Image 1: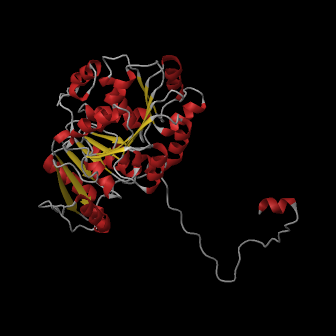
Image 2 (image 1 turned 180 degrees about the vertical axis):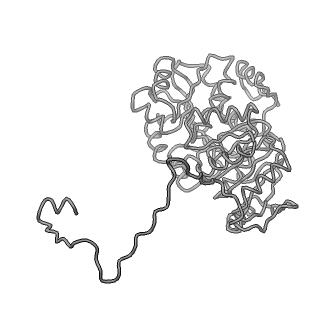
Image 3 (image 1 turned 60 degrees about the vertical axis):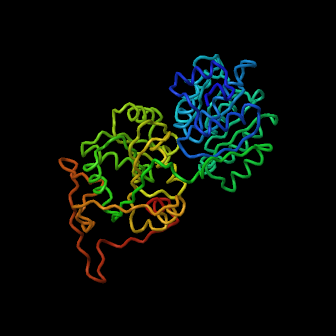
Length: 427
């Protein structure tokens, strides 16, 4: 089946061909015929299966006809995913007059406001908070919205965007087409879905919590104090390749990236404490091969679409099985193959059991020959070594003051009168 056979017009199929795609993926082949007639849709499929094109292509088709106004809105949870969806939409729309834009936090409001007021767009990709900020400044209006997409809707709820989503839904026209792409359906998202969709069609090509078949999974048991050393040993044996290393916290990502750089690896860090410019530069360097290793938190588990990622390493075991599936889904995309390695500590046994129940397999345990798993914590170099203070800023130990014998007091006794101003000031 070709994209033309799905009912897409020539300007859109020309953009798809220019992007290098000739045959639709299963999610595209089944979702596009449901979206084009105007049905509401709830869709779930494995990560890396082509969901973005599944909703962008029929939206662009609809926007070819009609007034030059903001008519389609795509809501996403993270800046990285917003930039990814915008880039894909621009590529598919390159031979059409449809204008595409994106707004998200972490960058100044001014340029985004000017883009909306002066240039205008028909298709806008946005994070919820920034969209509401711009609407509050009257930089955009919602009365012409015909299509709403909630992309990675479960992630938006996890990140606390449910109140913003409900507020946006109240501002949008009641008569519209709504598409929801979500991996899971937590209870709060069910409430949003009931408010947002009308008699939706449902499409589930594969269990959303099962990773792609091309991903080989491995667990590396290790004491927690040896995780950094084991990671170094893995890189020494396998090479850097194109690898994403996931940590649980922003500070952990920053510390690990610094240590890997000190060891001579080409590394970039991606987490919420980095500025938008730093995040874009890290992702660009990783995509272009300037760095081999990207150390990231879960903001990258659903917002990165990079070809040829060979390895995903979970330095910290993710908190939920769904996060595990999304993390390792950064490799093995579009029927490619990849390896997913997870460093597991004894205290991670509950999370490990939950992951194996979800993915439906017993993940093989792997040990590295020659690695000293018995070292004590006192013999391991910490991730962050304290710097000795020298020179004029050196901190010298002060001698402990001699203790007075029991019953003896130093200095003359002074009776404080709390009613006087001077005494109150001393106290």
